Length: 470
Image (cartoon, rainbow, N blue to C red):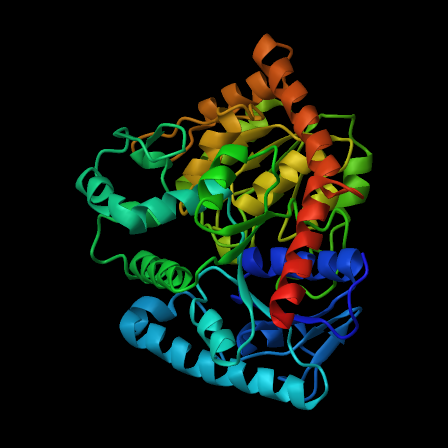
């Protein structure tokens, strides 16, 4: 693709792993597929974790073909979700908006003064103020939606007339909800932020307010641009719904299977888990990970350990150091390994992996699809219940949702049952594995040369360049 010289895209992301990973991988795709220059900006707190040796700590850093420049959200020294609750959430939101807008604006001025003017600002969800900064500078902007297109459609309908219907049934998890253009859903399958029942849940309220503000910003644009980390054949119906209102570009799966861009918010475990996997038979290992944010209850950990051991299958479990419970024995013998963090795509691509026990975050969902790994689904919050529904039903058919008890815990016996279905020799397991292999092929077709996602990414860049000349 021929791109005029000096096109420069600024990607603005929230300083958490689930936002930074797809942002870094989008940067890699943009530079490799379209040849544009890319700078990533996240909050100072995240920047310092990724580049601890930078001097001064907030300086611009180059990592391969991508540069990183931090903005300040007012919480430079210690960004943690516990800020919300310890502090007034309204004050937190206003501080982030004021400081973030001011410092991001300064970054745009600074880059222009250095001869690197920004052509387009792309921001992830819950940073709605970034689009306003771009607009004031006369720069085109786009939203990078790092959840499924189906969740975007759910939020859109909620903020455009369906909020009362959902709110009035929020305490009935099995209540059916029909939203235009989407498959029938239950309350429990909607993004959890839409069904908040506790006034004390300040974090969920804060996220919902941020999303509301973000959709308000989109409504200010005649034809807002949305980049989706999905692909056409995976979510065609949801994408068609959104296309009636917005410029839609399905460019996924945007993941490190194709591009590695360095810098990370988590340090990988020193254990040689890949060498350990090499010793295991094909499709024999259960991989377990609940992501970078979810925290498991002590009882849930105990049930997982029991279920994994009783399954008789080797397992590799990613459990963050901040989520360990004293007295819970996680390992025992050569057929299990527990690590604090790992390269998930590398693990899922290994021949020994036969199943992924997952929280159903969208990054993990896409990675399991692209690697052809069947799943046992244990959604926790956010859009994960929706992802589990899509994975088990709606034509994807790559997973099986575990049935939790009244405390929301997946019992050991249920985990064992799910693993036997997904990895065993029965008809359903065989069908799940066939579907997983089919979606692996479709995902890789989408991002290969000439694939639908590559074409859509090129079309997006060309449209941005065209708009700057208009």
